[in-house]
Amino acid sequence: MNTPPSRVTHPASAPARRPNRETDQQPGSGSRDQLSIVLVDDHAIVRQGLRSILDREEDMRVVGEAATAAEARTALEQLRPAIVLLDLKLGTGSDTEGLDLCSEITRRYPEVGVLVLTTFLDDAYVLEAVHRGAKGYVIKDVDTSELVSSIRTVARDESAFDSRSASVMARSLRTTPEEPALTEREHRVLELLASGLSNRIVGTTLFISETTVKFHVRNIMRKLGASTRAEAVYEASKRGLI
Image (cartoon, rainbow, N blue to C red; front, side):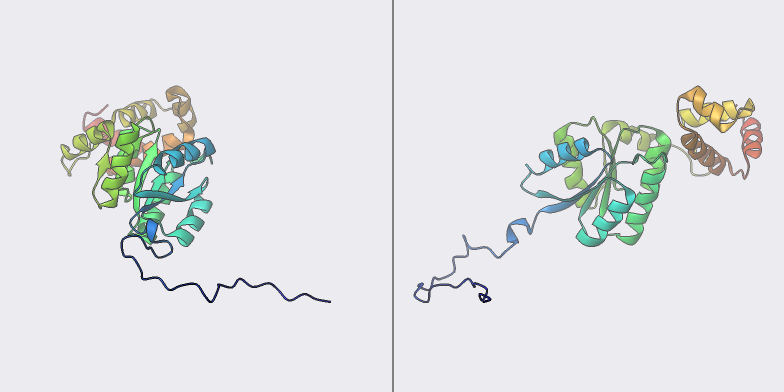
């Protein structure tokens, strides 16, 4: 014989209680003013460390994690956080996947603040991340208090940079818009290209991936107004850059 499912009931004799505005809360209201954060990093140990740090802050709550761009897209769609902490290197072999994801997030969810948290400290990456909509850029060895402060700054729709990334931005502001300056790394890549080396050999020489070399070459060509590598070398030579 089937037994009817049990039901939870409340005693009819329970005395009515006046609501106390100071102590009563609606379900979920404890997190009403908390900043919801999604962590995007391909290393679980990094995500765990960040969660333990941020969950100690009364005004912050980590609501989701993602190890890949695909997981990040799902998390953004389902959770709609206020802040995304984004690593630029997601372990796929592509050095631009994080930048591409940054563009996608800021385009589809303009209300979400993207704060890049990465190991990359290269002028081109900092500037490109900002160009693609990131509100801030900090390096992973940043002090805990500075990271927390940066998150709050981005939540106020302001820009947040650690001291080294801020120096990159300051240098870029001193550059005239008519002639964007090449970074030190871009200069070196350009010199090697002028020597006739392939992207693979350039990468081996500079201890960077071929994908990263291609990223720098694209930036060099854009800054010099060139459509080919040969044209970029010619234009750089004409300007006395190499």
